[in-house]
Image (cartoon, rainbow, N blue to C red; front, side, top):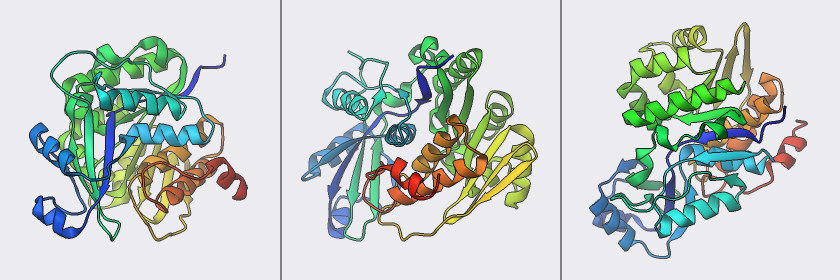
Length: 329
């Protein structure tokens, strides 16, 4: 039976607001260069008001992955929370224009506005991100329409949502719904600090409800408190059917049962490294939902990651289907 969606994701719905600036502006506004900082509402509003020639784009890790999958011709839906305000309506419309369904309508009322990340881009290409989480971090089980997930092949989750109990409940409800429909569920570990905060919960999640897990070297070694990556990957592979580890520019390792593949990475000089992990996940999931080998799925991930770091922004600009064809995929 054909499913309506090939991939459905749950994640933070964040509007990226970008502006160019110089280092003296960063210093003047007391913005730490090159990192992502969470900010409170008042600070977020101050920074937003200080931005000149703002450019807005729908963002958030899982949402970026789904946008990449749309570029590859896949059918997708994104479950996230936005307020019924100007940024929230922009977000929902922009996702749908990109070809990703946004089944949850913007929320009318409540205190929290739509989440936004104020991103200041320096002349050297460094991005200094100041994220106000707002309403998106309130995603919970009430946002999970089981019919949407039962009609999907794969579920993709982001670890960041584990910071709230209702986020954990949403994960569980969505995973049960996708499994009931015969689909598969997986998670991106998101960030070593996030993993450190929720180590026991993540270990339980991966060994229980997840069919695949994607992370980088720091995230896996943090998850299993391992000195060596190999020890961490052994532990992950014993817990989860499919484990995929990226190693920032080095070959990617993927382990599925007795099969282990090492996917070669062609190094490119990044213009803007934001979104590399999100687009790697898009290419990998594209391969998995279309029945490719593990090696070919990994190669698609590497091609998509290389494309996105070659330009500004976290979403692909070139036709990835054409790039896959050029690589014989």
